[in-house]
Image (cartoon, rainbow, N blue to C red; front, side):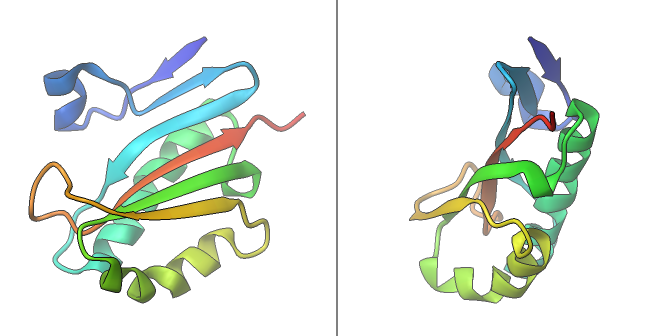
Length: 118
C-alpha cells in the first residue's frame, strides 16, 4: 500500500492523505479547489486530483468512479463542460450529492477512484 500526500492543510489537521494506492486501485480523497466560482474550484480540484493520480501511476482515463459533492445542486451544471472535457473520452460512473462542505467558501468537492493501468 502507498499513501500520497499533497500537503493540503486539512490532511494534517484531520489525519488523512490525498490518495491511497491499494489492491490495484487508487482511491483519491474528497478534494476541494480554490477560486471564487464553482467552475474555478472544480478545475482546481481536478488539477489537485490529477497530480495525485499521476504520482500513483494512473490518470483520468483510468478513473472508474467519481463523486461530486456540492452545497447547491444547481451549481453542478456549470461544471459539466469541465467534467466532460476531463472524463468525456473514458467516462466513469458518477454520483452527485447535495450536502454541506467543510467550509462555506467551498462550492464543490470531488472524490475519485481509478485503476492502475496493466
